[in-house]
Amino acid sequence: MKVAVYPGSFDPITYGHLDILKRGAKIFDKVIVAVLINSAKQPLFSVEERKQMITEAISQTEYGVPVEVDSFEGLLVDYLRDKDIHVILRGLRAISDFEYELQIASINRKLANDVETIFLMTNNMHSFISSGSVKEIAKYGGDVTDLVPSHVVTALREKADYV
Ligand code: ADP
Image (cartoon, rainbow, N blue to C red; front, side, top):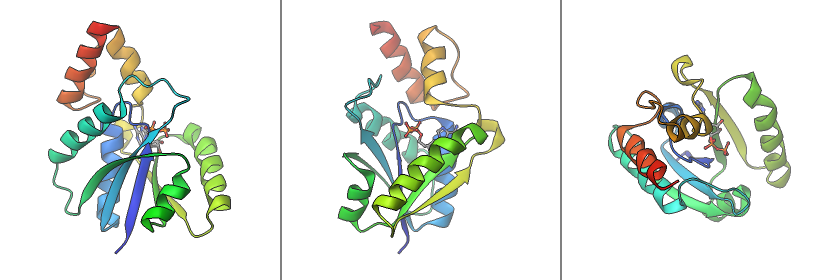
């Protein structure tokens, strides 16, 4: 059984992430979306909120294979080793993602030679979406309905009321 881990911050999940997930589900027998707990970053949403939003987004689509949601702290390769998984799934938007992704993939390969990173390219329609820009637009009351699922729009609105 070919299992892939799709790791990321997902702060919050966007249609870009979901597009990669859908493509990944066509290739793998199971995909685990793994939210990285990074104490150095200041996320807008807590890990639990992010996991909930991902779970709800996943429930709206038929993937054909199991898609699980999890979180991890520390090195991704240690998480993979614990679960005996050997594939990392990442998305590429534009050439600008490449340098960063190449660096991470190379480091992960150095740390775990039996792990491969697979990159999938998003639909052009979604290539301009980033969690960062979604948060920036939502913060100033802009319309993000084409960028994230409706429950994420609601969650962003609720956050905006607090900050
Ligand atoms: P990170 O903080 O680790 O970069 P993100 O949550 O921003 O995590 O992204 C997780 C993965 O999804 C990364 O591989 C990123 O390149 C990819 N990704 C993010 N947005 C998009 C998008 N719009 N289209 C395709 N891939 C995307």
